Length: 367
Ligand code: AMP
Ligand code: MG
Image 1 (tube, rainbow, N blue to C red):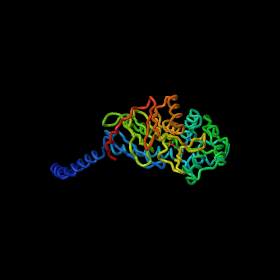
Image 2 (image 1 turned 90 degrees about the vertical axis):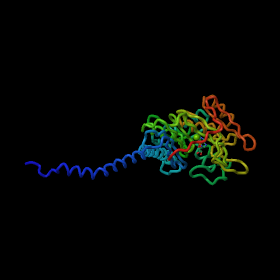
Image 3 (image 1 turned 120 degrees about the vertical axis):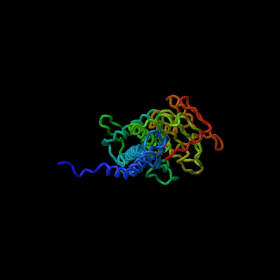
Image 4 (image 1 turned 90 degrees about the horizontal axis):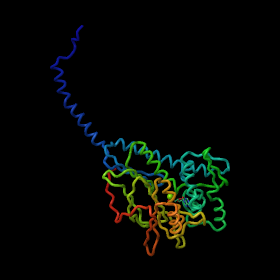
């Protein structure tokens, strides 16, 4: 049998003519959608995390909005993972569970927390215990962090002595083979706030590289890492704040190439008591908040986790001891020391990048 039902050619032409405008409209919609879906050359993302914020600038040339959404999901996942492990504010975090583990029995750790604790202990050793991941009881007693007592009710001499007995890098022991930690006293508690943000920055950078992003600047709570260059050309520039509690002015900028920068200071988190400034950085050797003229210290390092730990460590040691140790360790560090009425003096170790002054204004980028 022949197909007597097939349409005649002239009927097809009429149908095609009717469909043509619809076809063109679909093409137009697709073209507009494709254009709209292209990411801006330098894209910016950001959000809240770990009681602070994160931000990201990406060289997004040739990328789509869908790529940006994928990047955001990866960043959120990396940050949630670190926060879920190392937060002292979250009762269910791995660190909070470790702190409640009042026993000398080994406690199993995730690879990430194990690595961060191992790095923290390495910096503790290089600094004679000035940096100390077991400092938490002292931090809380002086009114800072989760579970802290009201500020202004610092411990008296007897309590200070008791607290100091619970603090010291020798009171925890890591076992590489079983990936466990053991407390030498059941009441030891750890605090990774001085190093976890830097670790989170490194984790985000790894996640982005794994997705094929090659040039970006990532920042978590002021700790920064960069890869590659800006889409407009030239290195990424990072600001160092003027260590002034009143405002958020820039002290200077530096250009960073495939490196991280972390800053620690007494100017953002502190309270005043009897005319003295009590900062959230504790010197475990005295058991008291630091009280020297160092307002902030910035460290540039290949790894953000070490930039973060070293910035806090040098912040504990202060302008003289810290500067001398930074030089001996070959660290690239920049110290801002209070001098006179509201003034500052700045000193860099030889490896620290030249300061760009006046700071170049940040060009606006699209969300
Ligand atoms: P950062 O802002 O990176 O300098 O970290 C400051 C935080 O580190 C404080 O809020 C404390 O939770 C914690 N911390 C304070 N003193 C020390 C110390 N000597 N060693 C390690 N961590 C500390
Ligand atoms: Mg730090």
